Length: 213
Image 1 (cartoon, helix red, strand yellow):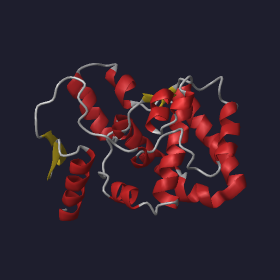
Image 2 (cartoon, helix red, strand yellow; image 1 turned 90 degrees about the vertical axis):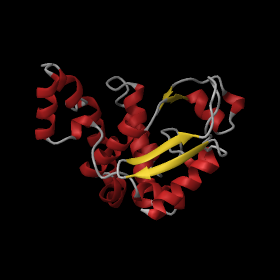
Image 3 (cartoon, rainbow, N blue to C red; image 1 turned 180 degrees about the vertical axis):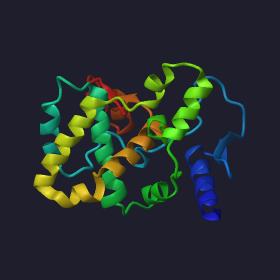
Image 4 (cartoon, rainbow, N blue to C red; image 1 turned 90 degrees about the horizontal axis):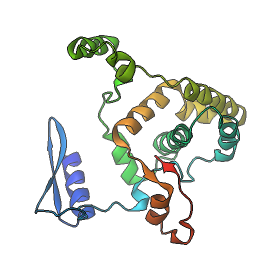
């Protein structure tokens, strides 16, 4: 616990240039401001090499995956395709190429519970349904209704097995995909392709736009 606290303390101080400080308790990690801020003031800057996105070239078999995804363009929107690419990049760094000290610490200290409501236990879902008093809440909040995306996962997995079955066993099993989705839906945020290029100092090609997870 002390090691985690020191890590977050140093990271918060460094990335916010002393504008923020962290506090760790049994409820988790909290970040607090050291001063008043005005609208649009920057409170923290995260370098590009401290992020994982769907546009990063991390997963080694991306061309094989893209060939499969092109066949799903008419069934899946761009957000689902980006979600797939992000899962592959995230799990590759987490389970295969896990020699980055910063990300290793991040992955090793993720909470051991599900934030994404569709992955909660049935008993917990039933309790929420009863408390809400809304008969539609189960369908809207508690069901994982992504049939086309799940089909895309199976097609990608089949092609990866043909190329390198060990990579599937390491990082693309059902449980590891579910865990990655829980991390993404509870901790990731969306920004544009333009924003990604600015973050990576690619300002010479800002004409492209698109959603990015």
